[in-house]
Length: 425
Image 1: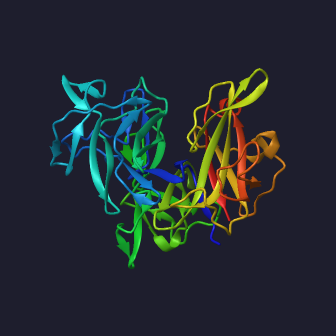
Image 2 (image 1 turned 90 degrees about the horizontal axis):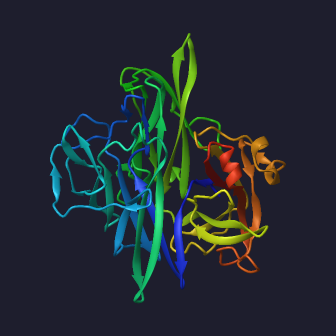
Image 3 (image 1 turned 60 degrees about the vertical axis):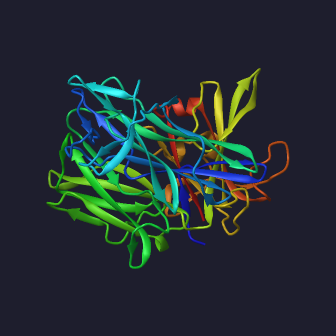
């Protein structure tokens, strides 16, 4: 079986009906701001071409594997529902149309009010689905904390509403006026309707790098599939003059989901120096299997850890809480149905600034575990999952899977946040 990987996934199962929601993007959701309020990349796009790529977030919602438009639904920003006006705006400069956000979701600049977001719909996989454009810079000198964009709604099955909630982080960082930052543009999914390369559905990812607000035209890029320390053939090379590298991934190169690592180098004092590392995941929506991620939150009460919530892998913890992440291979249409053939699970952790956490700094329960032979930063977390017992796992039968428990204090010691990449093989 081919190795698969994942970063997060959203799902809910009620009365045997599986609702799965995936937020798809066309670029890295990362923005940095310097002390003068200058942002990179620049997302201020209203009726102008003087900007970088306009971030587009779409919500692919499926009921028992079939794409479906949720009714009702709402977009949120840091937990607050985004409100929109009723007048459709057609931006002929950027060739997009949307309903602009209003109320608290506007920015005032030079006496003019600009919508921060635009709500629309798009056609994907033959279905109309929700779409949100980010039209203004989210990073400001007053906002240098990570943001969350969320989609909440429900779909109906048998006359009953099946609710869902899913979110995706926007990395917001403060930076000095100079400093290197790489970013990736391109769809983070492949579907049957994706552009074809050699007759196969594919996605084209463009890697760029900035120094301060200026584009860097000469650099070196090394691109990897996570878990393999050998660069992708043809993508360990110098970039001169054009300032970007396009990496094309075809459907046959991906099983379920792949996490890519992009390393950016510049020449300093005659040697190549690593100046930034970026991660980007691509989902193959044509595969029937999917690496599932679920979470259980526990709260310390009277000296005991009491389960207080379940989720899909995007969790916020208070100081008295911890979270147990569980991983397994399931079918896309019915996530609790186990997909046989995968027996080993590994996890790699990064802190809130994308620095890799070595095994020696893992929670004590995992420090002695084996590592992935091809990448020692991935630590083995394989266990046996069971649908029965006091704390049943969300699977239809006993099967191999992976688990890792993380506490709020562990997050605090790593810049108040942890990112995880999971591999199954």
